Length: 410
Ligand code: MEV
Figure 1 (tube, rainbow, N blue to C red):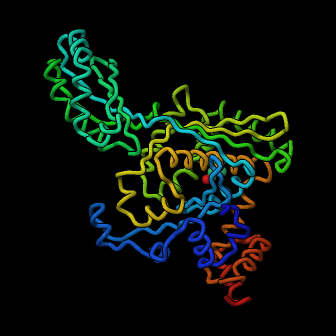
Figure 2 (tube, rainbow, N blue to C red):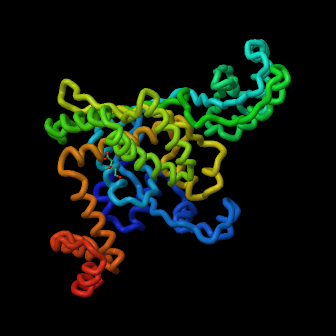
Figure 3 (tube, helix red, strand yellow):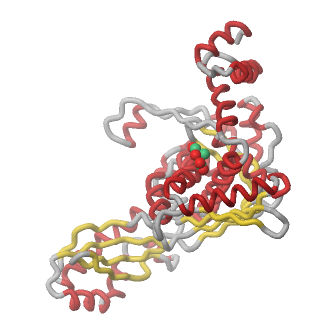
C-alpha cells in the first residue's frame, strides 16, 4: 500500500485508524491500544514523585518513501504545522523518495584515569593488555559476542593531566548505553591495577562520530520553481555563515526527529546533545546541505550521528512506543536511523521552502486558528469554517472563536 493518502488530514480519526491498520497490518488489539492512557500508577513505576501524566498528540506523517519502502511515520509533538509540513515535504521528494544509509553501530565509552605517576608506562600497560581488556569487556554481553560485535578497540587520549581510555563498541541494534557502561565499570579495576592510576568517570559518550546516518532526496524543482530552489540553497549558505541562523535551522530538523523519538519513547535528549555536538565539530554548522542538479531539481542531504536502538530501552516498556514501531514496520536500528534522518531532512526542507517562499506565519496561523476553533467548542465542518472566519477577521483569539461558535453553532 502506498503512503500517499489523499485527504488524510480531513478524515475522521476512526477512518485514519482504519487506514493505518490496513497499511501496517495492525490487529484489532493494536487499534484498541490507541485509546490506552498510562495510569498514574504505571507512571510511578517509570519515574519518581509522579503526580500526573502528560498528554502529547500523536499524528502520522504521510507520503514517505525511504529506500523504496513506503512509510507512515508517527510523530508526537505539541507544535502545530510540523506533521503537515513533514508530510508535504515527503510529497515533494516523490516519486523516488529518500535514500538513506547507516554505518555500523559503533559507540564510544570513556574511562577517566587520574593520579597517574608514570604516564608513558600507564599507556604502554593499557596497549599491551588491550586484547585482554576487550576480552574482559566482551564477557558482559553473550549476545554481542555471539554476533562478533561488542568491544572492538581502545583509543587513548590525554586531557589535562589525565589519561582518557576510549573503548569502541559495536552495539548492533541497541542504543547501547547500558551495555557500554556495564563494560566500562567491569574493566576499570583491571585498568587501575595495571596502570597504578585511579579511575573517575566511566561512562558512554553521547557523541557518536562512528555511528553515522546519511539521507538524500531530490525535491521537485518544477513544483518548487527556480526562484524557491535558489532561495533554499541561499538559506542553507546563510546558516553556514551565521550561528544564530544555524541554531534555528537545526532546531527545525529536530522538530521532526524529536517528534518521532517521542512517539517511540526514545531518549531525545541523547540525540539532541549528539547532533548539536556533531554540528559544532568545525564550528557550529547546519546539518543539511542543498544543491541544484542539471535538471533544476533540488538535491538535499543530511549527515547525522544517529544512535538509536530497536532492542532494549524504554521503547519496549511502552505499548504506544511499540505500536509506533509496528506502524513503521521497523526491523533494525539502521532502518530506524534511516527514517529519523529522512524525517530530519524533510522537516528542514519544509521549513526552508516555507521561509523562502510565503513565510511560515500564514500556514502556522491557519493551524493555530483551527486549534482555537476546536478549543472554543467547534466540531466537524464548523472547525474549518470558524478557523477561516477567524483568519479573515484578523483576530485569532479564543474569545472571538467563542463568539463565532455562538453564531454558527458547534
Ligand atoms: C520552528 O519551530 C522551526 C523553524 O524556525 C525552523 C527554521 O527556521 O528553519 C521554522
